Length: 109
Image 1 (cartoon, one colour):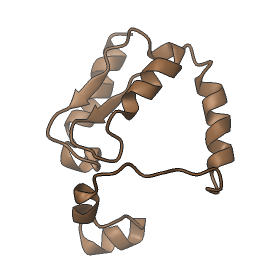
Image 2: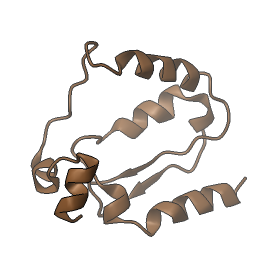
Image 3: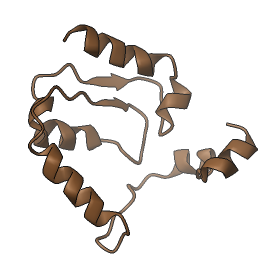
């Protein structure tokens, strides 16, 4: 990602993010916590097919797919994907694989 894009998106420094080992804590005081809770109210009842696609090298979201797979009814029995060789910026690290995961998932419907 070029420097201008990092500034435009307000993205953190990629190298610093890749070195970060601890997960990011989310506190109730966080300004979007209420919206997050409302989203989970909907997701806990979601029965339509739900696929997770995470990377194998993201220290920030590592293991997060298990929460979605466990708590969202529509995630049960789906062919969840872990994309190898990617980090936190999955779409940048493995751009062609991301849409292919969606295409493969939808083709099974």
